[in-house]
Length: 115
Length: 113
Image (cartoon, rainbow over all chains, first blue to last red; front, side):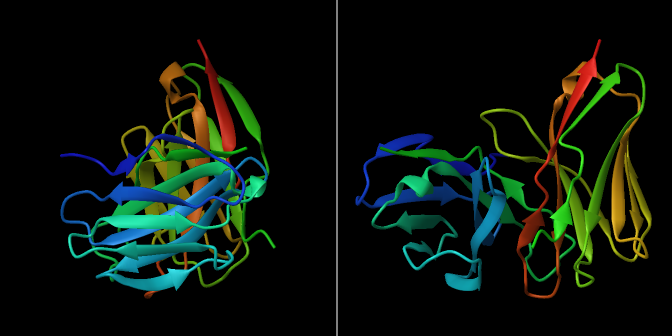
């Protein structure tokens, strides 16, 4: 069974640009969440999508946005990139979001570097 | 305000011995707790979880204990193996439709042969 797939694995951008990251969840999983990992702040929740709707949002500025498609695949977009956006962006999917006793399974992430 | 705390940045144990990783939380709304293992350049891998209605959950070499009154959980690995060397993250969820994980900063476990 394929795991969570994130593309691309690595990305280099410059300040002011925008970027789109992609996530394909495990087959059958309908909830997709995004996290940012930095050395200083650790793993921080960005947002969660279910049935193409954002159900939950973390404490990040509006430059961070996302969407989910009907096949549960999700994209995350960051506009007007800043140096501080350099991080590992992780996507996680889960089977049934209404049953909280279900773990989230993570992809290997996209390493974004801002120059 | 850090709601999930892993106060030990690192832990070193000998192969075959027990590894105990600790985690404290402050939010009494958390009702589901998870442990993840992370190798460099990979995403976190789910290890084991526990619901707040239980105080212990076991899966092979891994056991998680939950002490709700102390708002404390721990992960026991017995026996520890060199392949267990990784960063371990404790995570918690507040339940209902608020499905977002709050993570601790992680503990680097090194198992020496």
